[in-house]
Length: 164
Length: 67
Image 1 (cartoon, each protein chain N blue to C red):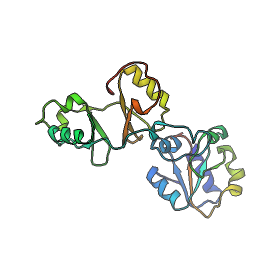
Image 2: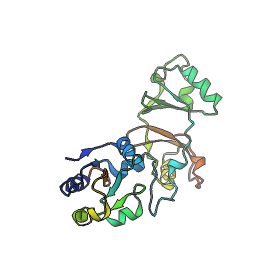
Image 3: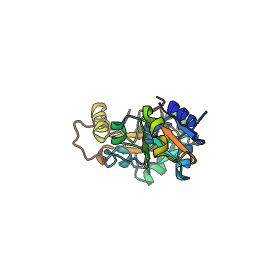
Image 4: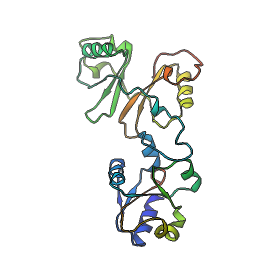
């Protein structure tokens, strides 16, 4: 629709028309502000922990573990230089081969959620998968944070550990 | 032909004062829209554009996603 509307505006004499083709879904998926009836609704983007420790593929697992523990985390996130999510290190992975590089032990391509997901949807998924947290990214893969089950303030249906 | 832009460009244009046009159904606009967006349904653009928008200023047009 937006390309047609943009084209029509130009025919009407509008001189500087830009087509944001990725649109509303892309904007909200990045956790950017919205207006309207659901603007005050709480989405998971407001509940994520953005202070999860992040690392690069070439980092050593021992160094990751040291920094993760120092900041109170038992998991870690692996990003590229543009902060695009590449993988995730579980507590078991952090305690595996300390001499290895992150790339050797991380989980590739973990499941991610968008920040405009409703908390109950995320909770249902966590219950079904029996995990305690999920990773949140924008639609272009940029890491936003970790959503933990305990931060949802919703009743838990089943026990769990982490996102798979 | 209107230039297709990505989110970061849209943000810069909006921060610089560009007008924002939502061409979705009214119901969808009422539910949620970009801050400050004006609503004109696609089929009403010709009828309402000059009433609601300034043709001399930049306009960022969007719908839901690549529709």
